[in-house]
Length: 120
Ligand SMILES: [Zn+2]
Image (cartoon, rainbow, N blue to C red):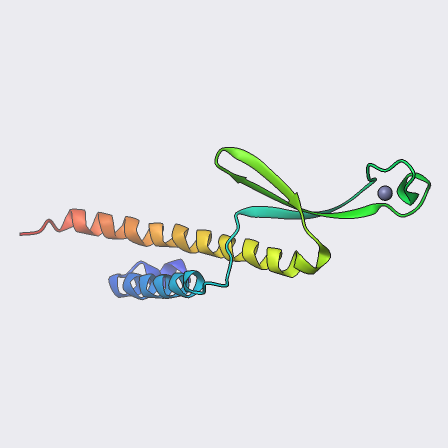
């Protein structure tokens, strides 16, 4: 959504409607997760000294999900099969955050509009 047309009053209303409807769509699906986290794939040796990874064999691949909530860092590894789901949940959260940020812009404009025209 471009800034040019969104500055007009009807443009703002259209933008707000579009933002709300996309948010409702994103939040309405009970199967669709939303995860504020990052995902990385790392290679690391394991804790077993007898393992091939300590004898020149291929390293283990770790799929790591890092999240921060409750003022703490949280980390867990997931199996490869869960990777698409985790990425989808992370992407959904980013989109929700971006939409909320745009909604803040819309309501900031509204707040300023209302200030100019006090109710009578
Ligand atoms: Zn190992």
